[in-house]
Length: 402
Image (cartoon, rainbow, N blue to C red; front, side, top):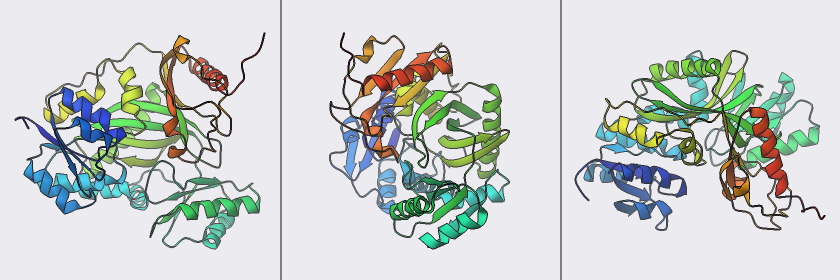
C-alpha cells in the first residue's frame, strides 16, 4: 500500500462501492472489512479483509495496525456504533460511540429529543411488547398510531394503525409489527404525525451543510416506505430544518460527519423521526446527488474531512425540478419493457424487472430497492409527478393495437 491517507470502511457491500470509488479517485488508500469473502466492494480496495465486523476489538486492532486517518463514511446502518468505537480508540474525526448509540437506538433518540426540547409526539416505549398492551394504548388514546421497532432501518416492522380501522385489521397489523421484532427489541408506539415527510442529507463540519432536502413519495397506509423523492429548494423549509440540526449538532458536539435524517414538517413544527451520522442509503449520493451537483459532493466532503481549510463546492446543475423514483407498481404484472432512454426528461434509469414478474405489496425497503429506479427532470413538481405516473403505467399496460 502506497504512502498517503489511509481510511477504513466497515462493510463492503453494493451500497458502499460508490463511496469507495469516489475515495480512490482522491488517492485515498482503503482497507475494507466485511464478513463475506464475495462482498462486491472488496474488489475495489487496497486491502480487503474478511472478518466478523461485529467484533469491535478486532476492528480496532486492524485500524491501529494500518494507522487509519479516518473511517470512510458510507451507508452502514447500526454499524455506526462500531465506527464511533474506532473513532474513540484512535482519536479520529467523526461521531464517537456515545453519540452513535443515541441514533442507533430509536428509544434513546426519543429520550434525547424529549430531554432537549425537540418536538416529539406522544410516544410509548414497550420493553416486552404484546398484542394486548399495544391494543390498550391505541384504544385509551383514541388516536392514529405508528408502530416502529427500536432498531434497524428500511421500514422493517413499521405500520400505521388508524383509529378508523376495523378491529381485525388493527390486530393483524399489531401481529405483523410484533413478528418483525428481533430478540430483546423495544417497540415504539407513537402518535401518527401528519404533514410533509422529507429525507435530509447533511454534512457537518465548520457549518451545517444542507446537501439536499428530498420530499418523499410514500406507499399508501398502513405502510411507510418511501418510493420516490423530489428535491425541494424552498428556503423557508431549509431554514426550519437547518435550525433544528444546528441545535442538535451543538448539543451533541457533532462534527466532521455526514448525516442522514427523516423529518416531518407540520406547519412550523419540525419532527425529527430518525437520524444517523452516516450518508443515506438507496444509492442516493450516486444516483440523485451525483446528478444534482456539478462536482461530486461526496469527493468535496471527503476533501473537507482531510483538509479543514477546503471550501466545499456546492454549485448545482440547472434543473428546475429533479426527482428520483422507484418502480412503485405493487401487485401488477410487468407486461412491457420500454426504451426509457427515448424519453427526453429521463436523466438515468435502471430497470431490473422481467416480463411477467410481479412486485409484491411494498412494506419495507427490501421489497422494492432491488428493482431499480428512474430519475426525471421537469419544470414543475406537478409535471414531474405526472411524468412519473405515465412511466409507471407504461410497463404494466399492454401495447394498444392499431
